Image 1: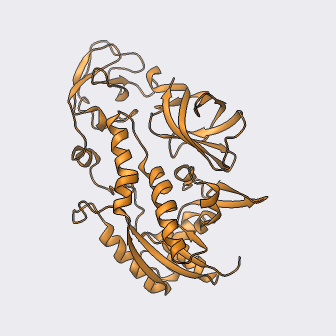
Image 2: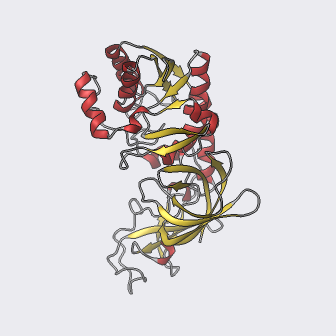
Image 3: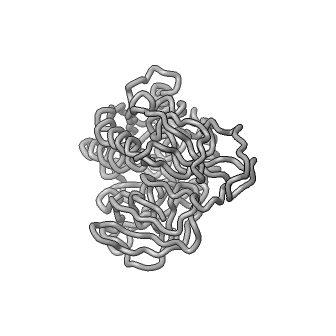
Length: 367
């Protein structure tokens, strides 16, 4: 690749730090850019953006590149957080990391980088881009355990044509080894596991500040009252922890598990404000052979041909064999060979052809 000006999203983490170093080693003019996406309570113990910026600046210093601090908090609130709250209020469970990538990292950040005269941007995501016959494909990262193509499936041709994912060619262990070898100050920093803007804070407590919450009944599949929920928005399908009914032992166990089997959230009935729970991981209410999705985004610019493909209905699950069927009004149906567990409206259904991520959409319903 010819030497270019490349703006790297430096998050303070080890993946983006090694990304910047690799590109600099290739002779590119590298500029670091730190994105601040949240500022409502940046002084709290959970919001680590100040610490992360210090780490990113230290990395830039060691590598010998410039770093710029850019505040996208207003964009984030308008484009990502407002939609996140709307979806929760409607009883769905959105994926803000997917939205953040589509609206902030590969729109606002990309636009800013182009204004800085960049030829391309780069991030520390575990994914790859391949150009074939003038078109760009999004591929899984080589480290399957770290692959992040699921979160990037809404990227389009224009975005992929300007994006590099250098660590997508590496395994995480190799990235850590390189960071230590180079002497990066954050070589041993643990990976962030929190949602992109919330960080590691208690999720329900955070959401309670923004969402109205009307308590209501928790009932099992037989309609028996087991307790009270704190508001349907605070629960997700398949959830096992935090239900407050762990000690309930009912007479005559519901099907799908013995009386000591754990409870799982199975349905949210908005019309009666009822949370339905079932016992047993393999209860029929938790299994779906089909789903419908809308708000589709296809990497190639158009949907793949109907027929056999593979899909994920949540991050960190194996690709599941299925068939794609277009419906009316831009909606699609997936029919799976094997039942899928806790398919959740609001989450993303992402399609694959081997290592190629084809795109996907937002799950509307499951059956």
